[in-house]
Image: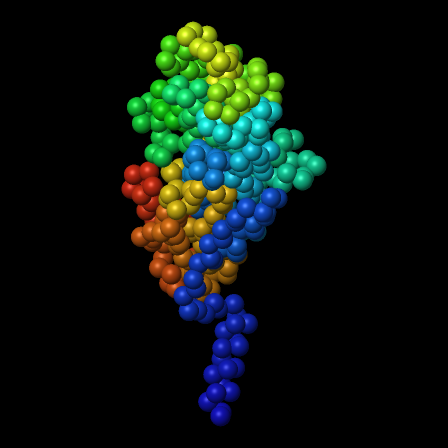
Length: 443
């Protein structure tokens, strides 16, 4: 009993003298994943975390039966942070069949022609257009804040954005055998992340801005033949608003209605077909005069343009076919990585799903001792405590870490200012070393 009392007294004396005791290894703070809620969500950087892996994926574009919408964009990067720092996550919604605008800036589907619901027989039975998917992002200032630091808007504080996919266009009906009744492609995001200066043959070329790098969505017809402009646009290939037309069996349909331009991060509304058709009596199996409406553009750092309607008027060798069919899909929203972040890369396909978006925070480097700005006495025994994290599902974080001293080792407590560094490797954009540091003072 006496021995225990002496030991306890000795430990207490060491603690009063300011001597830090080596503790058991501590696991790094856990990953946090945010799902769609329809509102803003917040994240507080855990104690000791100085480097954070952030992954975002936008909402998939809407389509008939959940199919056919454009792919969302997904991107990850590393962010230097301070413990206790507040970040704000906006998780975009998936586009909706015949739907309104979605959270995250997804554009609304264009209105269908009034005759569409009346047509029930072959070749009638077209489908409605769908809204675009909303973008997901992480920012430093809440959307509810009356003022943001620097006098900028909340949107201007976005650090990383995953663009939403474009909504599928609606299909009207066309005479049997015309081949003109299928929706024209949907704006999507590239499957392969393109770094500056990019590769036009493999994906849209990134756009370098003063704030960061914008990664445009794929074009409406789902090819790389044209690059989505950063500002979207209603009549530019790739923006979701190319004027629809179709020629088959010596008949050409024209006079479609273009979708609207994107407005900043919000995707444009699909073309409105409510003024198109019928131009005669809707007789199932003969001439159902309905043009497909346009899909909504996806939300993004810059939104995608809304899709055009299907054409309405026909010319050529045509008998009782003064309608046509397919609407254009909406354009995909662009993704973005701020210059304040490091090592951008495309996140795992498991993060970029076919539904609502997501945001993931993965602590990459945590330094608990020495804490940033800590002050110690000369000769004081202080044991380092640090850890690295890596999430294999998202590929966020770093591995093969080393510190100025090993975890649990003694810090340098000679008088003066010191820098403590933890470094490791990332392989997201070629294998190389990244590091994070804190400074402390010994008196």
